[in-house]
Length: 338
Image (tube, rainbow, N blue to C red; front, side, top):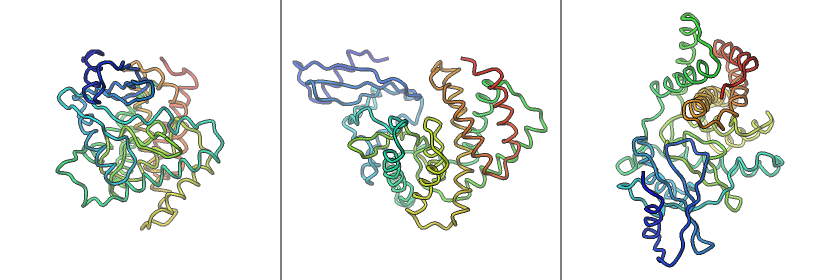
């Protein structure tokens, strides 16, 4: 682990800060990945973000090149200032402390344009031609497919269903559940395929001067655009009314020329939301119980509530709906062990 003194020296060299200037490091808490964030401050008004990452989590090593790529295709992302892959350190532009989540309790009239701008940015990412992607210089994680979709639903069952809810279903039920979730994953894999952020939730969209910037995009890969839409519009960190959610989904639909009619588009959205919310509940449970990041546990009730709603919109996941009800009863009875 690199010392604070070495990080300050690195920052001074990378940023060309004179030795007479005092550089201060302020930890930024609350991130779930294997990275440590600091806000650098010097000369009273200047600042930047310093990231020290664990290269064993391979997606962390992809961040810098993806950041450069996104800015090149006009998708707002923090400007990369310096990257030292030998020391696993990155310095990037400081976008401030305001994210979409900061607007949780503001009126819809304030949130609506921010989300619409975010969706327009995301559509720019989704509509980038796959054939134009510079795979020779920008590495990505393996795209969404049967293996990743299975990993996500196993993550959900192992860490949320079993560890949080204490539920272990019988072989017959497990077989039926696996069959319907495998079929759902197959439908997702057979639809539109494009670049996706993969963790597009409110805390990963910074707002500066009223404009959105994407962060935490190291997990970007090829997959279904509906996965990103489910991440953003069924975000357990936020609270949307059904009307607000539908309005934003309709806004995104209007940005493109789709082969899907509105009903089919909505169905694809709900199916991808089911998949995404299973992943999110697995993550909250794993981070909260296994990594000791207890703050994530508070989002389990809203995550489960959103999963129940998404599953209720999909006619082919009756076993999942049953499982969600059982999980809700278990949480109502026993709470969430911290």
